[in-house]
Image (cartoon, rainbow, N blue to C red; front, side, top):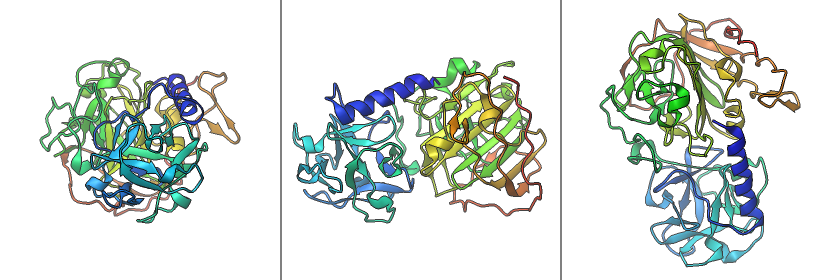
Length: 422
């Protein structure tokens, strides 16, 4: 993943939406009928109160009804096939509430621009769709407000209910997202899960090839059957450490990943939900889990994998883009996700959030600048449950509770493998 290209696209896109005329409206990379979920809560969805003109637009718990399905087309955001997200009476005033109205050609009240940093901007008006007062309660009416950087109320992620996945989520995707329930070693499933040390997936090649050469076409290799993915062969994983923090889940470990098509000696690479072109690596890759809510989609995630080690973090909430940052794409697991990488250790733990990668007090280090600072220490973990090993088996498709029956361990933090010198 190349950070510079992605960031430039984001800045150009946002500048066009706020300040100047658009050459063409920008839409999300994902296609079809989409959910719009506030960045503060992946379990809530943008919802039209009815299909009548003037119906209020609110957030409600995600159920996948027609009133929560939105299609991006021609600069409009459309529900029910013919109703558009509409700024009431075109009032360019902070706090104006949104409604739906019959779509009209050239209606400037209905023109929107989805930015590279997941904001929905009212085209050429300097206003963004805003979760009123950050209130996550069902029924909260949605407003417009002046677009501002780092405003979590203005982040809107697009995605799908796990129970209503499309066959493919992006054009040009090599695999599929609607994977069925039959696992097999030739599956091209690109829907991954992270739930625990016993139940997680890794992105790896569908055929023998380096991560750098195959990053756009990786498929899900998982510990659990029943989700239509490939299975990580027994004996592949030599150590697995899972943590749940207030803002993310993370799984790290070591193993012999030549068994999942990574060539011996491949130092690997970084995979994430954006990629250099904003489409993600792999293209169309989706990640779900049950830790923070049943079947929640993780919109921000980052992963590294080589022939011998892996790390995978998926984030929720207002700090998601900070804690699942993807800009340090050549720094590897030890630097980005300090954790326990010891062989022979298999465990589930609670933990505090790690410090954001690359941030040291009030300073932010930029990749490539010498000297390279050391990684942060791993955050404290507790309530660890030791496992004898991790092997493949059937997935538990019932709702998970998000916690474990813990055996307390008194070590203040997991051991950290010494990172390679810069």
